[in-house]
Image (tube, rainbow, N blue to C red; front, side, top):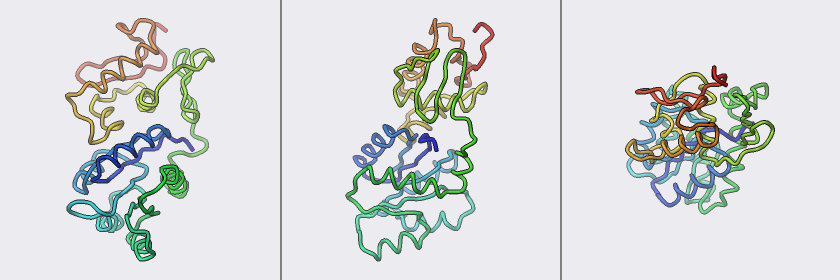
Length: 240
């Protein structure tokens, strides 16, 4: 199973959100973060996630209520791991009864969370189908090979130095090969609610990818700009 699953973190503690996002991104996940149930609801309307890490204590609607609501709504909500500051059996039972797939008491080792995420993903029917074993793990374009399993990029058999952020961008573009992906979509998929259209995050990543992929970054043949739309990865450019 590829590690490039999309995870949504719902927690009002900024420091914990930042820590978990950094850790899970380093582990190969695509991570978005929000601080409230309201933001989560809006995010789920426009984005697909393979799993959600949900804190019990949220401002407004709490995590337990959110979990119960999502369990009965027909919105194809993702599997949920509930975070709770109380490790008692009553809290454990409440988490599972409300529809959570697993729970974790704070404080916790981030490695334990990663292990729990993998365990839940393996049990999730839609994730099993999405990451089926017969799904290709390699994507080639020109002299490059993108390995979704090993999280690496090779050029004519030699591995290139690519960051987790750059890999995440390239994977998104590869999964939509030949079809433009908007600047906003790229930003939201990688940074979630932390993405702001006015920042230069997407531009910096595209710039770095072009320096990595293109002989002439000013006149790219693989990673092209579609004016007014976004960016598109070309698998077999005519001037290859």
